[in-house]
Image (cartoon, rainbow, N blue to C red; front, side, top):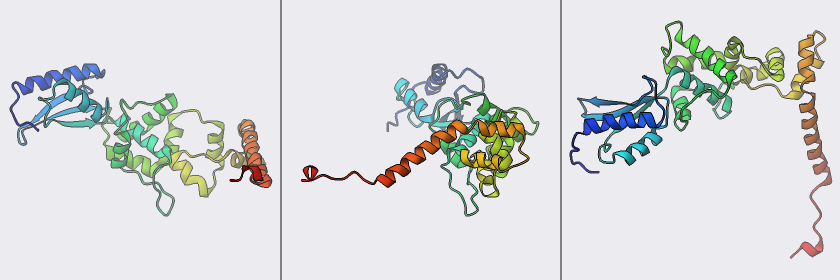
Length: 256
């Protein structure tokens, strides 16, 4: 790495930060790349919120000003909404480890790692947006936008799970989710409460069938699962038939 001083490095880095902010559509005051200088360490850092990944900014910066960015540090921060979105998607991914009680483990570090390669993290649809907003609203506790810390968001979803926030968000539940919320067993309740993992279609249908007090809405929700049930049963039947038939016979002509 070259140690030669770069003429007007501060000016070049400030202009570069503006150029990259425009390039990646970072228009908001709190989104734009901000060049910061630490008098103690004598280091420059590019800081920005959400937006592109560190690798994207690093590659673009090196291409524009290879000498000026030598030794430059990059720090990508996350808004409360983006961090909550990362927590939601991580919990729903099914990739988190569980303890011996079946509880998933999620931390600030695991959420940040999940977001590391995700540029411009935004909800994929209104349902996801409502869920994220419910979490952020609770985490901010009336203090205003983006007040909540990453620790607070993780603590909330870890202690309360996603099901409570989905209910409070006002988002419409799918038929199988509505039935899961009503009938899930104690064995499967943690998966639903924490990760919104629903019952199987067969479990949900059987639960309504066995409930003499099922409401008309619950019966309609169960009937809406019938096409899915038929498809699942057809696949299961084909698999069983294949087991009965056994592997295809090997003829003498095919042997070598």
